[in-house]
Amino acid sequence: MTTTHHPATPARHAAYEARTTGLPARIRHVLNLDDFERAAARYLPRPLREYVLGAAEDNRSLAANRAAFRRHEFVTRVLADVSRRSTQTTLLGQAYRVPFGIAPVGISALLAYQGDLAMALAARQEGACMIMSGSSLMRLEEIHEQAPGTWFQAYLPGDPVRRAALVERVGRVGYETLVVTVDIPVWANRENNIRAGFSLPLRPTPRLAWEGVTHPGWLVRTLLRTLATRGMPHFENSFAERGAPAFSAKAVRDTTGRDHLTWDDIAAIRRQWRGNLVVKGILSVEDARRALAIGAEGIIVSNHGGRQLDGAAAPLRVLPAIADAVGQRLAVMMDGGIRRGGDVLIALSLGARYVFAGRPFICAAAVGGQAGVAHAIQLLQAEVDRNMAMLGASRLDELGPHCLLQAQQES
Image (tube, rainbow, N blue to C red):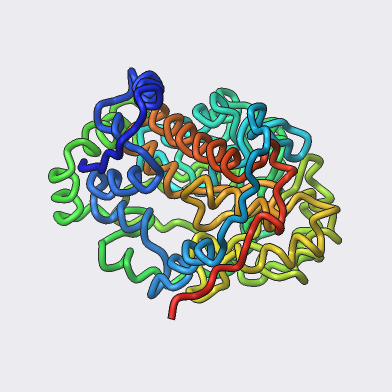
């Protein structure tokens, strides 16, 4: 991997060398989250690469999520004593060392060996929040046992009996926070997946076999290792019972029946679920108020990483109005487009209590395992810390709209 090295002071260089000692050689010179995505783009077979890095239709929302941050510039305060600054925050009663976490990413264990566990353990180690995906290939019981404090995200089954059974299973295991994703009544038009030969389950074809052979790192370290140690991966957490295998010529994954779900169904889950309830996929003030009304403890402002409705608003653009409407009464979180420490601070300044990112962390897991994810978290924390110092802020609660200036748009 080619990286650009900028001049650094001896002290900074020594600190970086100390932090990266012991890391796998393939990630030792990764300097930021985008580096991880570029590395994973080379490492993963094309079908999996397109699944992770692509989005819906023309990728308008994917691009808009990043572009939204460029609309803002920082207004710095100088000669402020920032020698005791802290990136620590509290979310739903839990203290975290960093104000960002890992968003749910489906089929993580096919992208990285035991990918869900690698991310959950790294998040726990580094003091970040991790949300396990309902489209995961590892049992939710295993993740909770080894990384307690992880949140679980569910795609609600259309059938109320299966829905209640899934919620009961999550609660019985001991998860304290349930994240319900509500922005997927139907599957999106992901043309990039079709062109790349990606499907769920994956269909064994000569083309897929060739992709594996031409990406030997992934083939040996992820697929063959998984098959040898864990057997054929299955969708483990879509329902209370085991789902379809990850590879099959004929099996069909059951994802039907979500287009009739309403807020009444979320209210029923609220009555059943005794822990924290977070509703993910909110883009409007009206829906944020509905989530508050049914008793949710938090919401995640999100357009599914641009993977659902192409052209959906960037979460950062709707965040201020939502935070103004409900931010005093529930935890307003956000995901979509976070890649830099400056992005984290912009979102927090506009009203987010906490932010999440998905793609860069699963890319870190793919190329570097748990150590890669921990390295990614440390890189982003260092950026947040450094930017706070230059902004003139010692604590996250000192951030606000006064820290930002609307940037002039290029003609």
